[in-house]
Image 1 (tube, one colour):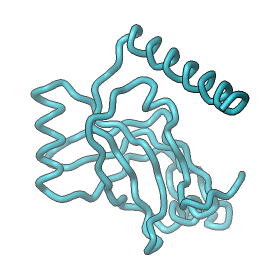
Image 2 (cartoon, rainbow, N blue to C red):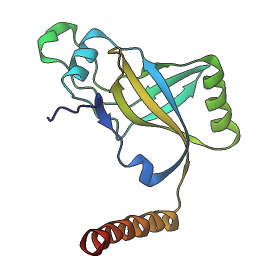
Image 3 (tube, rainbow, N blue to C red):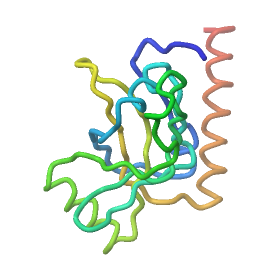
Image 4 (cartoon, rainbow, N blue to C red):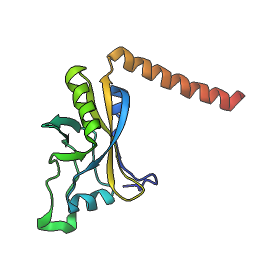
Length: 154
């Protein structure tokens, strides 16, 4: 596994393709020691995970943080639900948007901040329709073609 310089452990690349991100938030995670060690090795997957508001709290569901080899019997369960730490105002905003407006909260990036704390960037999103996805592909292809033309003739 390659080491990233920006502190990112895992990035959900599919999120910006499948969803239109309206607003992003940064949340802390409640982790066990073996989970932090595993994250420091750069081993995590948030591609199939989602964020769920339950009982006035926000939870990260189905995120895969593999077991840490050296922790043997004190290891953690790889896909256990993990509580997210956010301000009450932000939690209320997210739960209200999910309940009333039908929005989705998705994890975008799992990283270590400047102080060495594990953080999760989550996004309040609206699902894209198939035609919107096609438009995204067209824009991406046009930008690539434009960059090639500028490089050759500009």
